[in-house]
Image 1 (cartoon, helix red, strand yellow):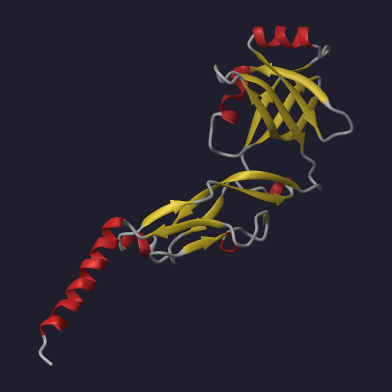
Image 2 (image 1 turned 45 degrees about the vertical axis):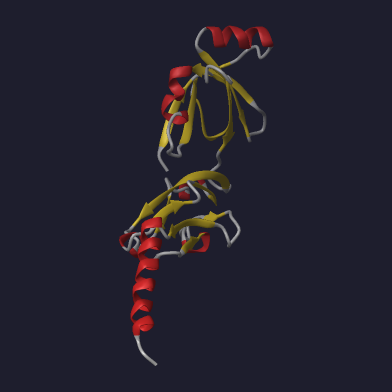
Length: 203
């Protein structure tokens, strides 16, 4: 999985006054969990642009100066309900020998037979939770829709790789090909046409 580096500095004070001052200065207060103790730090709001405002999944390298560096993933984010300004971010520390669960996007590959026949593809799950060691976290879960006929569904049991585990029930639908109105109308007209000659036959 691709990684983004966030350069920040540790916070000496974590009170409301200092937190407000940080935000007014264009910084975001953050906390890193998962280690022996929580690490409070801040970084410029612009540093999170490629991490927050993207559909892609990334791990994070947090550099706090003086040789302090941590590998992590974004765990939770708080934004202002009106301005969408980032108010606070929680990170969770990664360790090479410990599995982690995180959401990654679904990438559709292949061309569905059902779509070629006039069906409509629907992506039911845009992201899936996966569990793996940090080194095995995927950038995305590949979903091959090639075998899907019109009306078929692609279940979560048909996606994923041995390097990671998809953390969803087996009956979770990742994508499906629905019958379009045009295809349904064509099928109805074809059925009517097939019945028409039979009505004109004499007994």
